[in-house]
Amino acid sequence: MRGMTEVKEFFYMRFNKKKTEKLLGEILVDRGIIGPEQLKEALTIQMNTGGMIGEIIVKLNFANEEEIAQCISFQYGFPYLPLENCEISEEVLKLVPASVAQHYCFIPIDKIGNALTVAMANPLNAEALEDLEDITSLDIHVFVGTASDIRNAIKRCYK
Image (cartoon, rainbow, N blue to C red; front, side, top):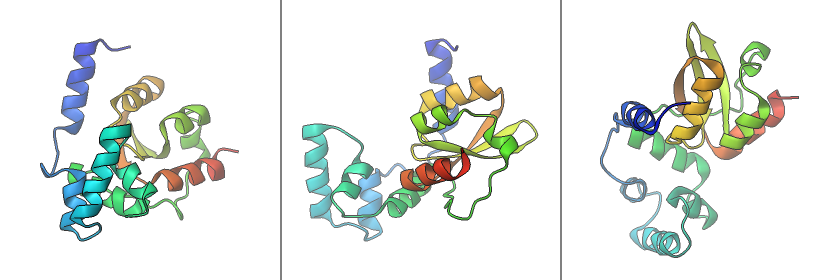
């Protein structure tokens, strides 16, 4: 287990590659996915109840999960990966218990050398990445996926 300083360094190194300083809501408005009034409504709900702005916007039916995932991909520089046609080998699935994949909403995709590629709904979840590195002893490469795509892939692949 890492100490707090190591976790902060890990998080900084992993996510210091932010492609834009714009917030998710701003990106959604800039791309014409939602309007400024919809963003304002979602932010008001977030201030009152908490939660992630992308999830709130999806719950309000202002945008779909794929649009949110693609904007997060743009914001942080992680590639977006739709999973509907993704084939995952048994060998890769054995690296991560299904319960861990379900808990953090990610799925291992491929292993090449000392690197494990995963699709995550929340690529900023440092705890998930740290646990994944501890479990597998591999370097983790992150793709962004939608939560529903990942949950469906977990159901389909872990039997």
